Length: 344
Ligand code: PHE
Image (cartoon, rainbow, N blue to C red; front, side):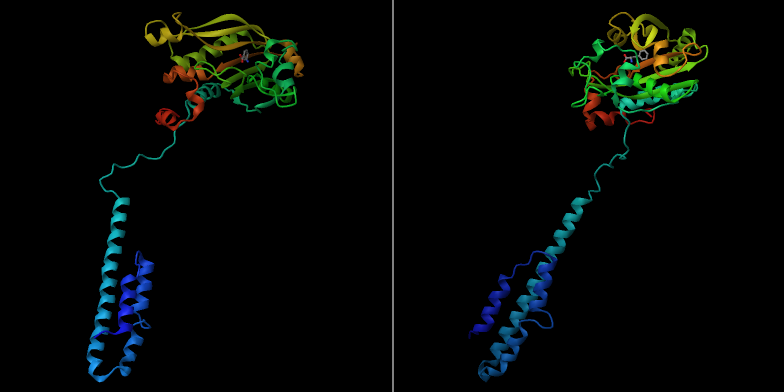
């Protein structure tokens, strides 16, 4: 005996799509809930001939069973799938992840060491702008208009202005400080500088310097030499020797470059010093009296010394980094190598 309404309901139930908790619940409400769609079929019973009532009742009951069967079957499937995906998220055999502790940039590590060395003997940190006015970067620092460093080749000027530029050295901070503070002045200025140079393994258009400036009564070249020797020993070891070679900077007179003795014993020292044993570390000199005057400081009363240390070369040497570009690419694979308590 066939019952059209029961058959089409059976069809409907079998075709139900159950994929997740929500569709499972919809199915339950539709076919098993208190107001389910099978119930009205039971009320049809009174319209069925007596001789078919039994068969109709059985057909309805098996319809109910199909719905119940489908419900439990899908319920199990869904909860199993959920368990599986939860198990994938938590893989108990996976190695414990490393602590997500950041690391300092090698340039910061070296810069912080230098700051530490100088603040210990009374230097204060002065920080200034990277976008600088021509006057502080060049004019105040005694760099005449026709000096090659002013050439567009070397300096990044701001669009439409030859008065504003990206500072080419931290010496601009000397002028900033001397025009706003009275001696005694004893500062170091760590920071980033820019030069319009072709980028290669050895040079970059941006790098870092630590500037030093000491202005007071009776500051002498010997004071500078002693301070720089202290610095060299603190950074390169207590046995370190230094030498000062005469040099030229527009803003110091006399001027010198300082080398430290690395020796020629190791291959690395030989390579770094090009076989001479001496590594060039910084430029320095007595502040030119004209610079003091440019900044409003009486050059009859005061003298001073200044120095500028390049950071990148030191960082590359300390960490055996072969290409300066690594320092500016911010590749995490490179940077995360400096994760250690000793690098602070
Ligand atoms: N400003 C110089 C440079 O960038 C370094 C320097 C600083 C030299 C202070 C003397 C005194 O090369």
